[in-house]
Image (cartoon, rainbow, N blue to C red; front, side, top):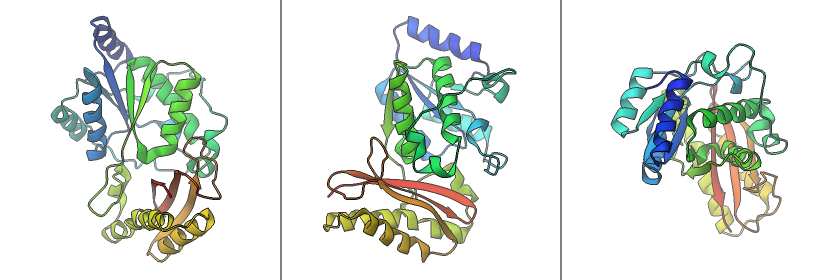
Length: 279
């Protein structure tokens, strides 16, 4: 476990000098099996796996849940130990954003879709912290979950644009038995809200079936999904979109593989999910 940048850099530099490859899994902690699947993927692709645990303040808006974001360092470290990772980087905010810090990374187009529309500045915080973490850990590859599809797309674009020399690897969504995508925020759901939350996956599966049955009009598909979700107690739709998986631009007619993505508040907890739809 390393808490300082100098310790983490020394570890990575030693591995690189010895010819070893490093897979990096950045997290905000409160780990669950979805995170563990990223670590397992990293172990299958590289000689060593490094995990970071850092709740990044710059990606939270003024009315978002930074203060209540779940954390359990002891539990997280135990899980990483059992997962067999080689190092955990646990910086505090002063390590990542020291006094006088003034540089942020901003993408021009991809953040202007999906979650970026209702969370202005969020992806500037994500891009900035990932840039800094990649510079500290110096991995050969970094593993991100496909649940945060827009985040994955943004990081891939950023790494490519800035010639960072890191392979960005996407890993499939890990789901609960009823289909709910695993998320640290799920712990905020009450028992009844937890039952309601399954409607996101149910709406995605129903939309996939509509497309397989021949529906091609995106507006009709999203209307059907919205109708399904709004009948469920304690739900408020932020967005439901069908878009190009590369550009995230809206797609009016489904004539090839598209991404269906949604954000829904269940109670006060904002959940996201997505699925590829293929006619």
